[in-house]
Amino acid sequence: MSILGTRVVRIEDPRFLRGQGTYIGNLDLPGAVHLTFVRSTMAHARITSIDTADAAGMPGVVAVWTAADIDLAPVPSGMRFLNQHMTRPYLAIDTVRFVGEPLAIVVSETKDEGVDAAELVVVDYESLDTVLDVTLSLAGATILHEAAGTNAVGSFAGPPDEATFADCDVVVEVDIENQRVAPAPMEVRAAAATWDGERLTQWACSQGAHGARDGIAKALGLDKAQVRAITPDVGGGFGAKSGVYPEEILVGSVS
Image (cartoon, rainbow, N blue to C red; front, top):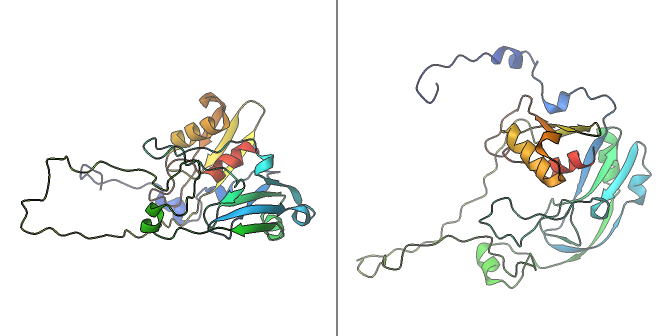
């Protein structure tokens, strides 16, 4: 049913049921290389060294890059009401702040070769204290973003001063913990890109082609007219595929 309550006839179902959908994973891009991300196993740590020599020597590996090889400065959140001093690098620089943060990229001729090589990238860490809940975070004993000087990402004004509870018969105070919400689409996030010397074409697993185009163009310093974003079939989104993620920007930057 549509938002107006009228019946909507679905015309896309037959090709999906026959396995004829076009997703990024089955695009035919002759000669394309694959990117495999090496990710942090630590929640909070200093990076003391990254050894990519063994990975770079693996069969089919074209290159192995770390932050030193990527000409992209850390960026703040695109939501302007959040603390703009909390910047995020595209690949971790000096410090990792969450498990799974990208540290390096393996560029390979096939996906399997990239996965094998990524396991040979050796990262040495100096463990730092972690922040595991909101109370500890606000206490500020461990600051994740030193430039911000706080762990408070943002705040919202409460009720006006005249709105008090002084005359209430009963006042109830409660702490409510909202668990993480994990959208789980059938198709995970993916991207593919080509550069012809003047224009970047990027296939985006996105809920909005224009938003993806704008985010990629801004991050890479390109005019919007230099970026063409194509959104083929998308296997679910649920909000997780809005905007553009650092990994997707990196796909465009190395194309």
